[in-house]
Length: 238
Image (tube, rainbow, N blue to C red; front, side):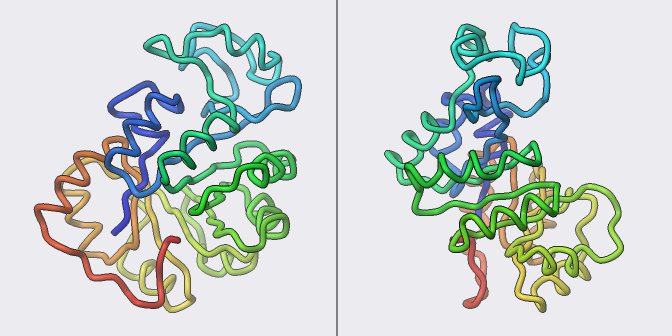
């Protein structure tokens, strides 16, 4: 199983910051960030639509220019990173990157930024099926994934309709049946967010391909202690 550092390493450092990404890269195969656009159209990493929870600012992210956002404290003296800063770090460290597209309609801007400095291992994901489909059209050689948290009638069918390669269900939506159906359809399964030894053990039992965690170093220690996981030869997170 591959480890995805959720928002870098959210359980260890301020989420979606370069500090969290550096910490996540120490132990994870991929690090994940959430992207939104600043007022002047620059992609930046922040989960919420507003600044209130994760910075010392207030109001909507899209109401601030990048220069204004950079003056804010995103935790431990960190600033909100731009996509370019993230790509430089990830490419310099040789890490994999998962980019969550938070806002429909921003796909082309994000894709353009990614093409300027493309990581060797890149996955684009979104809760929005149309964003997944657009990501595949803009960057057809890149893996894309459909995230979901609500009960879905047939998430595997929906993922295939938008040309997704991966489904990323909330952890409580994962079952052996879902994993088997996804694998039969040629899809990978990478649930979120797993943070305990029991979670890691159950993920291994269910046969998922990877998972997102707030503490990638704890997950790495567990996987190393439990021995090598079996990997299907026809399925891989690139």
